[in-house]
Image (spheres, rainbow, N blue to C red):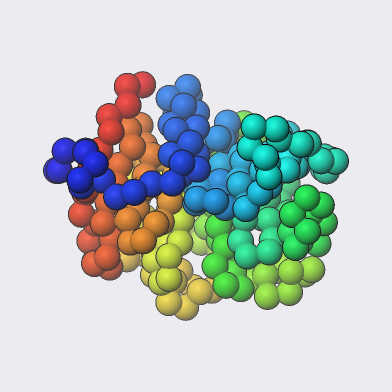
Amino acid sequence: MLPLNATNMKTLSIASIIAFFCVIVSCSADQSADVSPSSGTGKGGSMARFAIVNNTLYCVVPNQLQVYDISTPTEPVIKNPITLPMGLETIFPYKNNLFIGATDGMYIFDNSQPNNPTLLSRFTHVQSCDPVVVQDNYAYITLRSGTNCRQFATQSTLDVVDISNLSNPRLVSSQPLLSPYGLGIDGAQLFVCEGDNGLKIFDVSKPTQPVLKQTIGNVKSYDVITLNKTLLLTGSGGFFQYDYSDADKLDLLSKIPIEN
């Protein structure tokens, strides 16, 4: 493993570092993504609670989407918050939309007017924790059982939702998982964190039919960011960088140990 220094560590955006250290703090607190810590000017993980898109900062709290104009960074201006049902957890910006994961489903907002996002639709499911990532016409969602937000469910799953019609998202496939947390996608590679059960890599060449290609059991993973063929990963052991330019393997580039 290479030592972490300015020469071999690939450049991270400030937003990426902040987002991931928020994830690390949450994992250190209770080894759980039930308390989730984003994307935009930089790129965040699927379990982030905030996102920066150009000059706008979005934060999700249990029953609100909060919007701040940060055109002047030292003087953020709060805009009208959007009240939603309880259970908001994560936010993932993609193109001109915001995808918000909640315990009762996924909310899709039109973000063409950044200071005034408007609700387009909601995809509902049984009560669950549900990080979400999006690529092209599909959203990928992990639903985890055995948690505070899904106490009575018996199965964890990876769901694929067709969002080609943003006003009418629909489930197209679902498959069981063990203990899913965050996830990330880049082209034909979908990375799914399974906590103590490792990291799973799926082939999504056929977007509606993810095919499991590899399980890396010795990596305790909670969330990931895909960035220029570098996988940024948080787990119980710290913050890791992997090169995934070879689709058949991950090469460890660096590690920042984090004490639990």
